[in-house]
Length: 422
Image 1 (cartoon, rainbow, N blue to C red):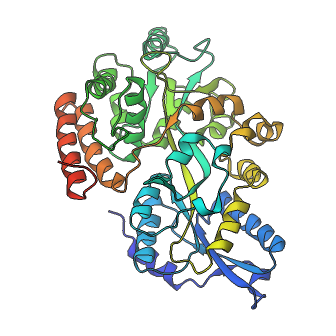
Image 2 (image 1 turned 45 degrees about the vertical axis):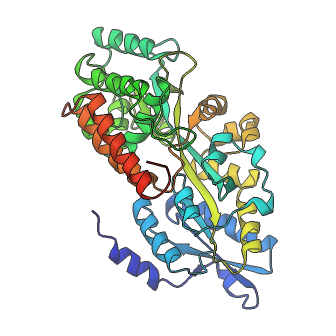
């Protein structure tokens, strides 16, 4: 495990990084927000906080820096919120953290503020509900995409069978070394890839009642297809068993693969002819299903939530509402390349000019997106599943045995924490 104590200690020593003019207003209420404060994300957030301060002169705003690595930020949040501190007032949460923080009583429900949830993609809103209440609002969306070579295929594959056939034909002609590249190392990225394969076969990890279904026949078929893509079809290289996002991008960028499963961040990098040999020769679509109507994309992204112990929740929601306005999201898309969660924005010319991906294609993919299991113990369930899925992909276990083993552990965990009956 990476050392995080020095980062936590350093962060505790940092006094609030205030916007210069906000700090000068001693009489104003101080509102704090934590989240990514580096690179382009930090730049756009600071710019928008200054704009909020100008529109709300009665509120001073401070940015509480946190580690940029998701696992380190999560650890720091747990320390802060478990100690019942009143700041940061507003928190940037990963999409899978909301149920955990809500169940622990660390963040406040937002229903009393009547947010316009109908304006957002339904799957993004669903990921931030717990026990019938809404605890966070989506800030930006990340979603799994299938990148495909437009010089090697006339259209994106509509089914897995078509993907396999197109990829293997291109390989046979010597047009590419690999049929498809994806993230298959033992880490969280593997679960997002597995979610898309599960959806392709009509399976899932948990059902709507929170019951474990990852050992269903559909799930076994999905994992078997993933394994056979490596060892039977020679569609996915065995090297991908140790690959994360960047190794996958490099292979596709160098022209070695017909298809790639990755996230939106890769699009602008692949479009740069100074570093990409496939610039101008690729497009994106949803990862295909076994049939044309089961295409599935894994949902990612971040949301904004309010600290349950904040002394100024109304002001905190004013900041959340401000950051989620279309003009702020458009600026974030332009500067940081992050996709907005508001549905109507995908029909605007402004968004088309702001992001490298065609908004119509992005919208179609997001509409097929599904969140990972919405549960307070998602991290523990994922850790169990990562081991079992990777064992099947490395042929240490058969897919059914691996998933049955995972399901047994997952059911025991849910029973232990009283989220399901034995």
